[in-house]
Length: 144
Ligand SMILES: [Ca+2]
Ligand SMILES: [Ca+2]
Image (tube, rainbow, N blue to C red; front, side):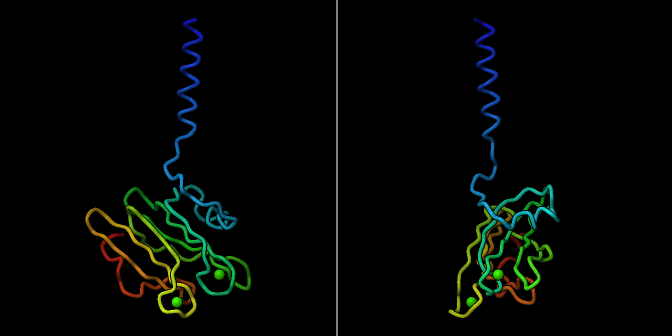
């Protein structure tokens, strides 16, 4: 009987470990392998899909833990020659949120990204230009 109880307890512990997931809200994306080809082991914090460069094909924005103290953001974006990856750029360190919006009723859609580092909150409106995100208002200073 004791052995049975121990076995049941062990099963419970193992099952509990199995459902551990720090980032349960991650979306599924067919573009993720392009990110993983360059960053096989980095922990993903958040990712969203949307058309960054207005060619009608969804792109993938990934915020990931670059090192224990910094997050970076890269984008898998569509080109006539297939998908490519932007250079990494700093991203907010905590409470990261992203959304595609259109702030001026003109294509392309802009990317709104927010977050904080400690008490330094930031909100950036980025536009994809020349294969890289440009921070239109410099709103991310201090939170990355
Ligand atoms: Ca696109
Ligand atoms: Ca726009």
